[in-house]
Length: 114
Image 1 (cartoon, one colour):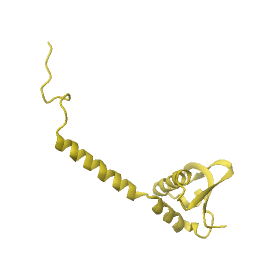
Image 2: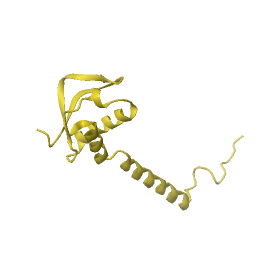
Image 3: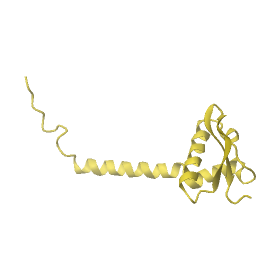
Image 4: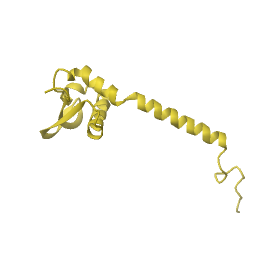
């Protein structure tokens, strides 16, 4: 036996208020994400880890999940943004273990350091 879909099925266009609400939620979410781990915040975090005084090693700065995520952001920002305050120096080794995370064996050096 064949049943017809009700008029409120997925074929009908969304209500304009629903679309506007979803757009608002998406905008708010994107703004929160921008603020969460911005390029300035990652640079400041690396500074707090001692980057203003010395070269940083993954094994020193990765202490758990939060610092691992910040480390990953630092790699992404250095690779894609000219205004990031740190440079990546590669080593002969490809990877290293930092608090149980296998990460690239790199060094992070502040751009204004010699």
